[in-house]
Length: 421
Ligand code: NAD
Image (cartoon, rainbow, N blue to C red; front, side, top):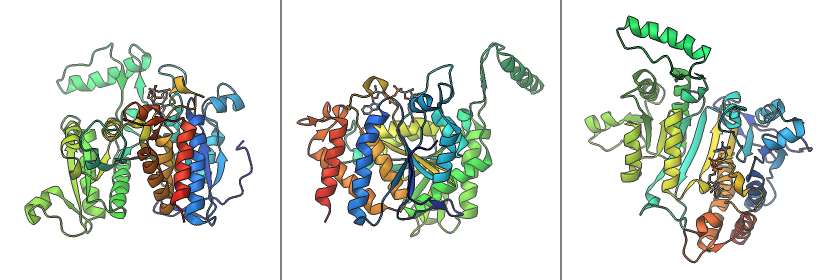
């Protein structure tokens, strides 16, 4: 039940997982729960204005709404927060953007976001973290950080393979594990333990690192850092690092160089055009991003590390309200605001639509519509520098004028118009 008639063309994909975008692509959207409809209403006109001004009417997005969360429950029934048609719709249209979806903390259904990523095989969560001039930030030099984090999106402890303490499943799995531990002369796990599984495969690690290296090559980054906790989890996190290096050596030998080689053979100076592949232990990486941010460009990491790291990095440049994100696979991509549905502000036209708008910017870049993306970014910067911001930024900025979510979007549209010929 994808409502409304879309008159555009479907985006096709090439064998390397890149979209071939026509001038009038159908792009799917999901408004989301809570404050989702507020931020979508502010964001959509920004995208339309930017495309209109950048291409003089030659290009146009044909929006197609799909339903998930509360809106889907109202239409499809209370048991259907994520209809099959929505998943099939995203797969068909290839590129989609969404607002946040609410997930109850326990019981009920599994996270709709995780289900979407897994069922569409959106294996790379891509989170660019860069500073926008004028945004209040907690560090002295937020502009020193400019990284793009590629987080593996389908496995690790997020695979959802776990058993409640005391359950039959936990007893059975613990029985098997404890038998193995006993054979190895190790102490058994406690019988009252809950059990979760952390699968990390070569296949998923390789395709994530491959996408990260390609991105670095295509976007002028000089390093890809593999972030892992391999000192403790040798066969999962440690293997992620080893597979990453192996891939770089095998598939990108002419374009990359390891950090070790860099110092052993080149005295720390990378040969022209070579991307340095390095690795860091996850906990040290948190310090590195604060202390030596300019040494990092693209970061490739496992699911849980990536979750923590991308939120911490976003906070460093001014917070989650402005952080964009995208979930990318080889046949479709879903861009999304990185914050949650902030239900207490729902319908108040109050929250910051910046994260969704900047996720749309990433979507436009992914489509190859760079001119439109650049127009939006400079219009956001001008709006913030004019002192027009939503409450979250206004309370941290001197002399700022607090505006509503919709007014922030309108101000960005005005700046797009003013900046255009
Ligand atoms: P949240 O991000 O929704 O809200 C936490 C606080 O951050 C809010 O109270 C608000 O003060 C602030 N905030 C969030 N977005 C903002 C914005 N755009 N502008 C200004 N301030 C903003 O996090 P939560 O309360 O932990 O989660 C609420 C729901 O969202 C949960 O059900 C959670 O599962 C879900 N969630 C969804 C996604 C997603 O869809 N990708 C991501 C995270 C959380």
